[in-house]
Amino acid sequence: MVKIVCPHCAADLEVPPSPIHTCDFCGTAIQVSQMLGPDGTNITGEKLTDEAKKTYIIKDHYIIRCHYNGQEAQSLMEDWIKKIPGAPQDFETSAMITSRELKFYPIWVGEYKASSSYVGLDNWPKFSHPAHDRPGWYEYVWYYKREEKGKIHREYQIPLMALSEKNIPKYLRNYTVTTTGKEYFDITHVKELGGKVIDSVYEFEEAKKWMFNSVLNRQAGEMRKEVVSITNRNDNVEEQDVFYIHFPVFEFKFTYNKKKYTAFIDGSSGRVIHIDVPISTKFRLATILTGAAHAIIGVGLFVAGIMVPAITFFGVSAGVGLFGTGMIFLSMNFRKGAQEKQT
Ligand SMILES: [Zn+2]
Image (cartoon, rainbow, N blue to C red):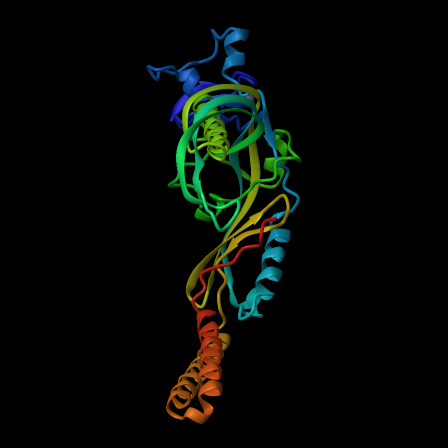
């Protein structure tokens, strides 16, 4: 932990030496690594000039508001689970919620305008030896490399989940956060709901560099749609805006039948990001028995079909069908979790 003074509200803070810390009192996103400098010495703030203070603050700090309280989010989860085939209908009474946390996770969003011109090589066909019998046909076709030039203009909105690979919950990695409803960051909103602010593992400059490179890669992707190899390129990438945004996620841990499960609910939309759905014992038993019965009869018919020529068609096709149905029933027992589809 290091001691710093918030450049905005002058509160004394003791923070982990991470790149960014959101002030617990005023909600300002402070660039801790900048304040500490390369030698890691503490800055007490007394001698800071206004100019220096500005450089220690992330100006465009936003929040996606959470529209559910913990109890509402829990009801959303319970209702959703009960709609899943095989999930326990007595979830409220039989499952035990062991923890319920609201976390505001960090994401960087950069907006860019990119114009690139490129020179590349593309495969072009060459035809020779017109066929005598078929007009318009050729006996030989081969490809040669032809130089092509072009320009690509695009606008991008690049998101960067600001959590380390290790600490980010697996199901959040590919989750698309809707950031259109962002508002200026408001620490009282977080406190009212008893939320916890998680801060970026990337420094501001690092995040910008990553997003900038991502723009270059996407432009290259566009070029490769036109040419097979790029021999020369010239990019002009304009950074429009870079936002540091916190978005709400409810994280539930619960036990059912002595097993542990986790659920993630988007606190802004109420969407289910991921739930490990428990399967009730009754459902498990029924599907295993039905599945096995289908599979056995299926195999029986299949074998009978092969051995008795008169019923081959019926036996084989019905056998395969029943076997497949059996497998579907059985596989319902092996699923690991479910999420709502993102559109
Ligand atoms: Zn502060």
